[in-house]
Length: 544
Ligand code: HAS
Image 1 (tube, rainbow, N blue to C red):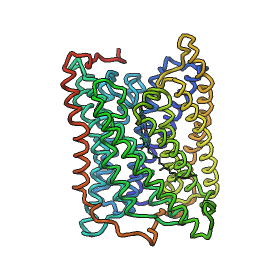
Image 2: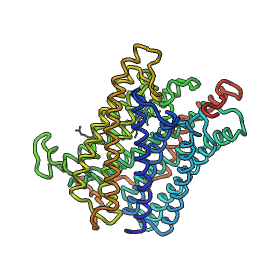
Image 3: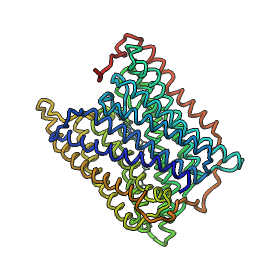
Image 4: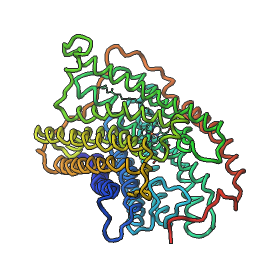
């Protein structure tokens, strides 16, 4: 294997170990919520909930994404020796931060969930670990930016390769949004947890968290879109529908995925409703690039099916490679995003948000989006990416096992996420262990769904064991060979992509203006309305 493959693989090992650990915690949670199981050895519900959220939502995703993006960049613009050296440094810093934060959670010193805003308080080493984690990922950002910059220097005036363009946009979103979380960690949490100050402005911490927390979900989604646009067309024997449309969708994410954090704070006092309204409008804007993507996928599928001679309105559907796991897994991911995205639009609507906020509906929403759409796409990628990186090939037997894994995941997630959605509409809260709520009649209605959740969760756990087995088999147990890195070509109808799409100063400038517009006045309001000593400041909860 090439030296740059080793760096990508190093990320993959961490990602799949995280899948195993985090998945086990998820299974335990569904058991606790069913009311039929109590955790042994004094382990707390919030301790495993934190491990589950941090290890899957932050560690698995981030390591997989950075590893995958290095592979895309190496393929499209190359990776120099200097880049590789820095990539290892970034990897070590990110991993050190991960280990530090994970240790604190396992010791029960950081039961603060993956959304760790105040007034919950963790051990200072948890926050220092998080800070290191973020700094490590920033190194990866600047490597990716420099990779494209070096390529551009050699070919001035040339349009950058689509894959590299997409990676740079995703890392720009990550860099700009992590500035918010880094600020709350450095200026609020570390001094507060060290006891240097006794109070914290809760609303500021929540606002800075969600300034990061929403773009975070697009940082997860965009690598799946990179695969849908640039790789899936090749796997189905088709072509990329439109280069310009793909780039436009990514640019719209850069503009609209950040100034929308208030849609997680719609029920929160202390933020003027006018600014919530503005950010809800911007939230509806960020659905547009996903609708463009849906359109583009249908177009690629139809073109590929028709090129194979399938006629009629929908017969081209038959021409898709249903027995190829590299296609089936991401495809089911796309299908899941239809209800997943529709759920997002429900969440973003002010009145409907009042119905679902803090219910387990929200948990159902993100198990469809990140745990199905994104994860099934990542699994689908692994079947060719891992053998490619290791100098091996995918065998028909593993492909078949992969098809089974995909269906196991789909069935388990449909049962679990479906029950979460319905239960949420019946009022069941999220983030809580089993309770009969003093024998309340309403809580009785939830019990059947909670059992269904545990059934779905158990099927999913079988899916995780299968996937981890497949991962190790792909890494070490498949025949040596040369697995193709599938890169799609453009369809003949492609129009010329406007060069203004490459004007980074312009797009970063507009993104900055939108962020300043959406956040400056409400932020000043928040600070002015909650001076130290006011109820906006809290004593720590959760430690000691
Ligand atoms: Fe969300 C809460 C709104 C997308 C993840 N979201 C969350 C949380 C997470 C999360 C983790 O406005 C919980 C955070 C917490 O712990 O509190 N979300 C949205 C909106 C979208 C959206 C408007 N979310 C995502 C994605 C996620 C994700 C993507 C992860 C990857 N979300 C919210 C809101 C909340 C929220 C509120 C707060 C709720 C509360 O009160 O707490 C949009 O981006 C969705 C747009 C998507 C579409 C769908 C396009 C469809 C496509 C598929 C095409 C299919 C094909 C197959 C081609 C419009 C692209 C065809 C084949 C056939 C057979 C038909």
